[in-house]
Image 1: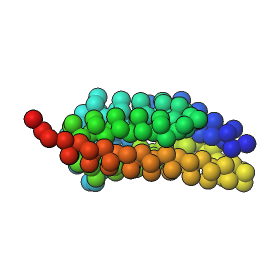
Image 2 (image 1 turned 90 degrees about the vertical axis):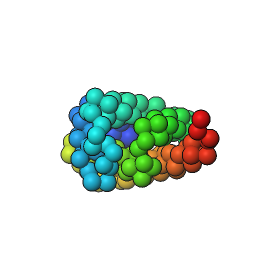
Image 3 (image 1 turned 180 degrees about the horizontal axis):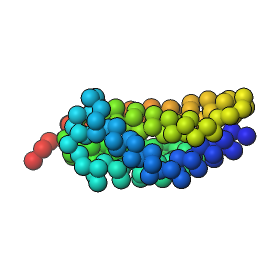
Length: 151
């Protein structure tokens, strides 16, 4: 039953990746906690979220999700680091990405009945674990990149 709900959640996220990504991009480009993103064009910002939301199914339902998380978030960290996005902003942008996914799903009212709410809690918990691990990986990757000699 959990998979049926999670399928609904992932389906909503995939099918509305463009809308969710637009909302995230607008928010991250105006949020006072992400000032570096304010200078980023929508053409650069938007595809990052679309890519994540459209590929969330692969990560969420993977037999080895932490391998998928490591690949995605390491790439995210390398890209943000190369663009001189401070670590705190790169992490807050991830927090906002997760938040926008859930806000959109909540707005779509896919959590209607009592059992839906229980399944929602389980899906939220798994999503939080994936993002938390991803956040750790981003911080670790930044540390590795900072240790590399520039030259």
